[in-house]
Image (tube, rainbow over all chains, first blue to last red; front, side, top):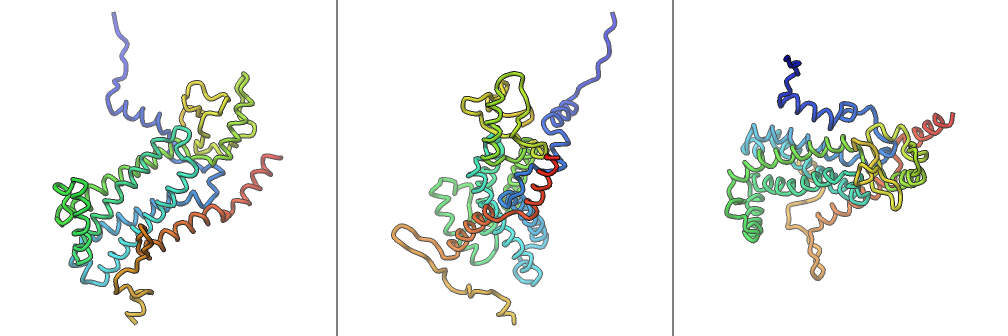
Length: 259
Length: 64
């Protein structure tokens, strides 16, 4: 008896198939964005991302040149300032982004992981900035570190997170925290690509109403819901309609399989 | 010339602090928070460039 040869499915093939299934190319790099993204409130996420890129770039240059360079030369001062103001912009735009997403309940429609990765990024970015302020190698850093040590000791982490130890803080600042922030931001962006940009409440409710009115079989596309242009990036509405007819295969009442 | 370009505001002094009962915050932090609130409000209220034109084009396309 002969057995038909089947192609070997090793871990790279399984990983590739899982990746393409979770994030097909048309979702990873879409042709356009939903119509509701035509608003200033939607730019603060990418503004935060842009600031992060400047932070990473200027931080790499500061790392290569060292404290004597950034304190004692004009160009060093310049890149030190670029790094500082990029951080200020990063937090400024991230907070406005956070407010915008909070008030539009951006965790709707199965986007809980998107919200959580963003929130954790914010929490990780705070000590990332703190370790930068105490790594300046000047009196400002000395003052901040001696103030912050009391906070760390009160939290019970001062024994292994010693803000007066320059070498330790510098390592956290240029390696561990940046790796964590970049990894979380990458996951955040990929999750946004997978689930689509969260629609505003009005659009979501309008679609909910149309789906509720179309509850009787056969299922039809929502007449007054998201238009073809809206769904380009997979921006599916969220939330199960009260008394309506959510997708029976989706506990959150989402539309479509990939959202 | 260097002094003129150094800083718009003279930062060579202790921070100004707003202190009212339990509330205590530096003026610079308050300015940043107010600026974030203003930017947030403007981002919601101001129309996005080209949004009305694209919306009209979509409605025209769907109506024909």
